[in-house]
Amino acid sequence: MRIKKLILSMVISFSGISTYAQQVERPKLVVGIVVDQMRWDYLYRFQDRYGSGGFRRLLNEGFTFENTYIDYLPTYTAIGHSTIYTGSVPALHGIAGNDFIIQSTGQEMYCTQDDSVQGVGATGKVGQMSPNNLLTSTVTDQLKLATNFRSKVYGIAIKDRGGILPAGHFADAAYWYDGGSGSWITSTFYMNQLPKWVTNLNQTKFADQYLKEWNTLYPINTYVNSTKDENDYEGLFDGETKAVFPRDLKSLKKSNGYGLIRSTPFGNTITADLAKQIIDNEKLGQNEKGISDFLAISFSSTDYIGHQYGINSIEIEDTYLRLDKDLENFFNYLDQKVGKGNYTVFLSADHGAAHNPKFFKDMKGNSGYFNTKEVKTNLNAELAKKFGANDLVRSLTNYQIHLNYPIIKTNNINENELKDAIVQFMEEVDAVSFVVDIERIGEASIPEKIKQRIINGYNKKRSGVIQYILDPQWYGGKQNSTGTTHGSWNSYDSHIPFVMMGWGVKQGKSYKPVHMTDIAPTISSLLKIEAPNGNIGEPQSEAFKN
Image 1 (cartoon, helix red, strand yellow):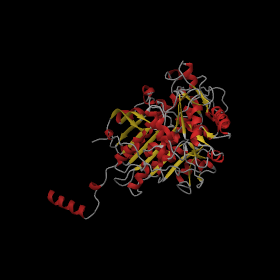
Image 2 (spheres, helix red, strand yellow; image 1 turned 90 degrees about the vertical axis):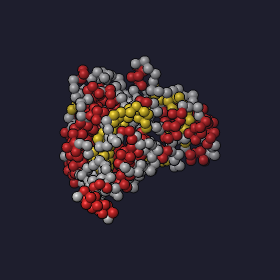
Image 3 (cartoon, helix red, strand yellow; image 1 turned 30 degrees about the vertical axis):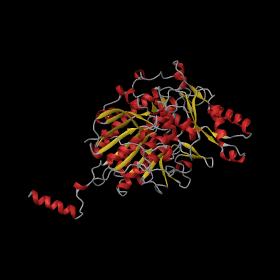
Image 4 (spheres, one colour; image 1 turned 60 degrees about the horizontal axis):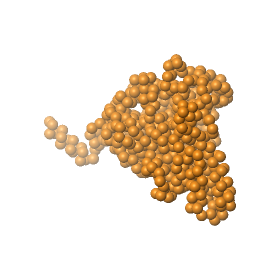
């Protein structure tokens, strides 16, 4: 009998008839989670207060790479999401910042701006978005190609760039939040009208059920990992006089609109709610064997809250405690809907964040604010004296110096002489550690690690030709500004989590240095598909089960 079965199996195989034994083994669903502005240490800073089913479940059941670093400059949201999903860097994938400048024309470009499309579910610029500016493929694109477009791919985030860039060019849809209407929207790049289930969800005015009150999840005196509630380092909502708990969100909505929810933990909750709706309505994880679906989720509110309140605030601690509960609820949902062991989750971040400089200085550390507007004015004045032309520097955005090429050409100015003068000026500016003419970076005396990150972040068509590096704990901003920001090479901005859990992943951890660019090829290897076409990362297969 066994011989007959073997012969029959061989006949079926040679006749070209597909059998389950021939199917590629893949999870039913891959869920990529990017927590916007999540420093690596948040995995442990609040660990004693996390429940067992969220961040701690990831660590206890999954595999964590404890030393994952961003390997380019500057460290911003759009670049981070692009790099995680492409395994590439701005030099190749072209997303050189949240905003960048087309150097040949001087045109300012938003990372997902696409004036050729229209919003669906919204009017105006908020909907005119697509992945068109992303020059390389994503792991989600490669999954589509590998399965002849039978896999379903969706991207969601409150921020357009957080949903669009991870979903890639071939996605079934990307959805983002319109703070004007309080609705989930998309663009004609993906579809001409919203699915009925999205329209029905929008009609419920779902944000209203959360825009009531934001008080701490636990008694406020238990938030010992944070500074006191009322301090000088936190920003205000319109209509507030003090940044303190509790917050009457229903009242604040009158002056802040539906966009208010972005800067509360409930922005993460409505994102998780949408994720469940997509899985339900689009039937993700229910494809034929060997055909994985992919849901890319970005939790954006962590970034909005960090920018407003800073990393030492009770608001940040409360946000992560609430996100932990959202993750637990979502993982439990996946267990029931897709089946535990049938899906793979990975979690990372697009960047970290710095301590507020005033806070750091008040604690007797070295820090400060770099007034880019003032430096640009003084630099242009100095260059005008030397070269006889005004406005030779167009911008200092992205910690890069962008030249005004039409004026340079009109005045027949030697570009190398101009760059030398800029470098000489910037080297004398307080708190500037290094200034580099990127096209002559081989001559620069700077640490090799920083040098490589500058090279990786430089896109000739979209980046400024000179990079400046500030002293640690300094960043661009007005004196004594509240909250925090990011963008530097330092560990507080570049050390990010990378945790995998579920199908094909063993439990464990690694302390070896890995890079953000390694995430996409690792997921590609797990799925047995080709890595994205601009990938420079290495697959980290030690996380896989044998």
